[in-house]
Length: 130
Image: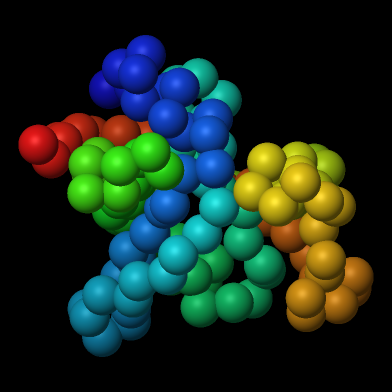
């Protein structure tokens, strides 16, 4: 499913984003994350070995909610699936996201030995409120 142009624009802003994955027992796991787009997909960056990354590897189903920074009550929900995970460019990606969200290089909260993974999500369904 193609992302609407206004959603692509929103994804290129420092929008609030929440990502839901499926835990091994079937329960949901929800985290806030930085988000971007390649123009066709939702793109996030995660740390290899963390729960969210393990969930993506086991079950690619995902839900993403993105709020407009100008009006957080307006949000878009995307249900889809992970179609690619790669470490290629992961460090550059997290630095670009950090500049977008903080105006500074990534602070490497967990240490620079982390392996960063770029996660590409394809939308299957998009809904908006209002």
